[in-house]
Every structure is written in structure tokens, then in C-alpha cells.
Image 1 (cartoon, one colour):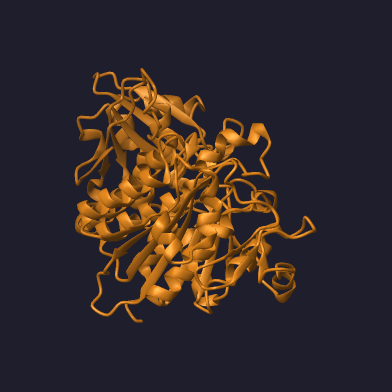
Image 2: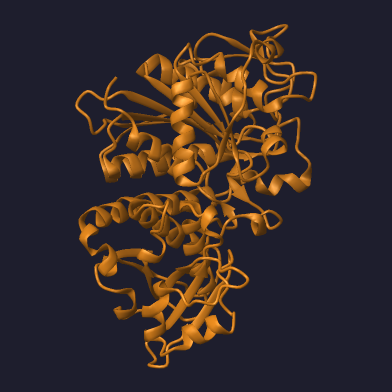
Length: 510
């Protein structure tokens, strides 16, 4: 979607629809809001008439569409809900609701009247960024394999008007930055939505190489022969069942926008298809397992946005990619595999494969780059979904400062995370009987945190945050209706906006 900024009034723009925010009115409220005066003038009194008939209440998800008598498009009033609960997430959802409602209705261009969304306590900068997020992400649909599609909004103009025209320079910068991030999320969704027959570990390596060529990033791809030389037994074990799509470890390096900035390593789980291996999954759950690469694809998106925005820190992305399928060459329950840092993993369940892959990637990132901070993203456990549902990711961290900063970025971007504890109780549960650690435990309790306790064995004391995104990484037909309008069916690119926000705010100090 093309995103523009115009200092003029939204109602003066030559667009198919003008989008305006309206707060929820009280049961006895009859006074017509002054904020709707321009819309009412453009619609020749029809907006006030709708207000007087109480067709406009301003409730969340409410949309009122009024066609202008002069034939110059439509006025779309979108509900913002009650003022006391107003925040950037309300703006993000409202913009997406408007864009989604106009899909298939002949509206190709819209102008959003920013002043109606930049209301206390939401600053004009925050409102502009939320509008861009909502419009771009709300207009997304994965259509690669569809013969025909409905047309949607192709161009969004953020209209400043006389209320905000003096802030044009700063707001234009905010809109341009956020458009880069939102379009990167769309780019990420397109890759994450690809089926496993198309998106193999080798395909992810190709995507990384293309990204590196486009943005000047250093890209290194380790194939199965090199992984064997490096003693990456975890990735090799998980990928051993697939002879047609062998594993890869992919490394991308962004040098950083600061002369002496810190180094942040971002590691992603990239299981391009997860059948569960010999510990095979139920058939009904398997069709969504093309999304098990979402963490790795998010890392691609994070590196792309970091380079485009020129964030201060040096960022290293490591993708642990494999296809986990059963065959005569698959790894087995009872196997013991040796990882990059020399620790051994006792395999009790081949469907707990993500942590086995990440073990090598985390250890490699720490050993080779000595990062100041380490963040991993992974669709790691069903226990995360049980604990937090499908809208919120789980955070486990060994560093309070890093965790606090990520929580702040979460609040700003609307990508919710919740911190979970990591204690010696969980660490003891993952100690192995035959190997150093085991990839599952006997009791079906605390599965999200025990998985994190397993991963901690491979970060070597580096300040570290683990994001288990199993729930919010994608939506299904059953969960889609509960999600905000800026989400979509399938992969949603969760984690890109969150981590990029964190990196953009990160200190230049090492």
C-alpha cells in the first residue's frame, strides 16, 4: 500500500473516502461534536442528520458510511469507543476496521483525518504511526494462490489539516518510518504464508541472500556439510528425516547505524514444516505447521527493517532452519545429540524439535559475535498457547533491563507479551539423565518455561530474552474472528514491529 502525507484538510482531498474518528457518546448526549463540522459540511448536513438520529454512537468497531451528495466519495466515521480507554491500539484497530470495511467496495484511495485520532492521551506522532500500521496491515491479504481477488484500498493519505500542519516535518518522518516497518511486516507475512513445498530451508536461504544483496547485508549460509564440520548436531538431527529439503543455518549481519553501537543478536526458529517427526502430530494440527518457520521469518523482517531504518545497534540475525518429517533417516526418541557448544541433548520427543535447533543457533551467535544482548523468537510450545492464548506471546528473560525495554516496545506497538518466571525449579526439570539436558520432561506442567530453561543452557550468560510466539504467530479460521482488524488469516508477522521498536530505541552505548 502506498502511504502519503498531505498538510491539507482531509475533506479537500480527491479520494474515494475520508476516514474520521468518533468517540463514544453518552446515552443522553445530543450536542453535535465540533470535530465533525468539516465532514458535515462536505456531506451537506448528512453527518449531523445521522448523529441526530443516533445512527452514530462511536462504539468500537462501529462504522458509518455516508456518500457525499457532490459525488466526491464517502465520509467514513469509525468508532473509537469511550475516551477513558483511548490509546494508540484503539487508533490502530480503527484504521484497520475502516480499510477492511472498504474492501471490495470500489474505494482505492482514502484520506485519514489525523487530528480526530490525535487526541489526549495519544500524541500526534503515536497516532500517525498507529494509523499507518492499521491501514497497511489491515489491508493485507495473502492472495498468491487465488485466481481472483476483491480490490481494496491501495493508497492512504495521512491528512494533517490546520490543526497539525505545523508538525508536518516530524509527522512526515513518523509516517515514512512506520510505513517502512508496516510494509516489512507485509513482506514477512508473504514469506511466512508460503507452503512447505515452496518454502524449504534452501528457499529461506535464497530470501536471505536476496535481502542481503538489496540492502548491503553480509549473508552466510551453512549447508548440511558445513553444519557437520561445525558440530551443529541439533539442527542436523532435526533435519535428518528430510532428504529432499536438508537443513540450513543462515546468518545476516547489519553493521549498525552507530559508530560504536552495541551488538544485538536475534535468533529465529525456522522449521519449514513440522510433522512432529517420529513423535508425529495429530493430523488435524498438521496443516498449520508451515507456520513453524515464523520465528526465523520474523528475524528476516527485523533485519530488513533495521537496515532500512538504520537503527543504532549492530544486529546479527541467525536462522535455524530444518524440515521435521519422519523417514528411515529421522532422529529418534532416545537419541543423544551433541551441539555446537559441546553440550549434549537427550531426545525424548522428536516433536520438541525447535529447542534442539535453536541450541546450535544460540550457541553459535554467542560464540562468534559475543553480543551484548540476545533475543530469540520461536513458535516453540503449545504450552504458551494454553497459558496465554493466541493473542499474546510469552517472554522469559535473564535480564530485567532487557525485559523491561521489550515490554515497553510491546506497549508501543500493540504486540502483547507477558513475562514469565525462570527459576531453579524449571532448570532442574530439564537436566538430562543420559545427556546434559533433555528436550522434554515427564510431567506436563510449565512447558513454556521449561523450554526456556532448556534454551538458557546455550546462551552462556549473555543477557537474553526468549519470545515464545506460538499463539500469536498466525491465525486460523477459528481464531481469526477474535483478532484485531489489522491481523489477517494465516501468518501475521508477529515480533517484527516489537523488536524493531526496541532496536530503534536502543542506546548507542555498548
